[in-house]
Image (cartoon, rainbow, N blue to C red; front, side):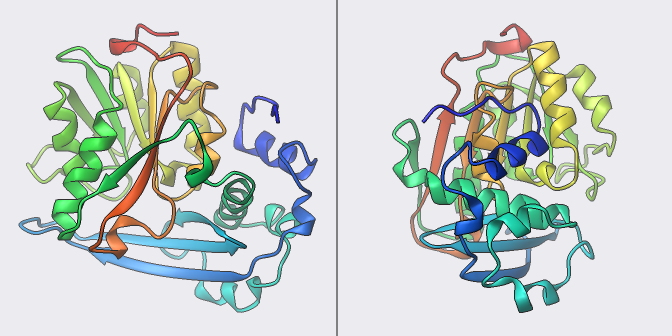
Length: 281
């Protein structure tokens, strides 16, 4: 089935509501709703990561969205199960809309059934072992020349290290962290790092905080490679492959930090690979 190429998440949502991506969302209901608050501190680190997730199950698939503290309360889940996706796609809360959109797109085309996805199995082990393996796999999506500047929007310290290991100069940006594990300053001004970047790595969190559209537009207009690492919103980000997104590392629920056993990620590349150092189109 050929889908219209989306320009924004809102446009993608409208297309789904119009039935352009498969069955009517009004015929699909949420069977389970989860509100999760998760903290982690990797071995030897001084940073505690605070993560909030909304996860919606629809049949055999899950949709998810991360959000900032206080943006959505756990009471949402009291009545969420049983709602049809068309209702939640129109919800006033952005995290709810993104989770519903992710649930729909995951339901109609699960990552595990996508022929173009490369399966990457994370090893068993402790959180730091699994995080390093995960972030190395993400960095492998970067086709960059030595010394290329890589904007990292949403800072995870092992990913900073993985970008360096690929020969890149990391430009970290985050709304909550002020320094990396190694004491380098982290800016909260996304435009600052985008202007310098030869390539961009962004997390799925950008889908809910309103920055994904700005990043996508910048990378389209400048011909800058955009790699998305998405636990939450992974099926939403996949819809923009070749339409601004160069590569995607998708890790649908349950996420790697919730298990010590081997788990699978799904790595995608746009059909036309974009070259290193911002030279692609």
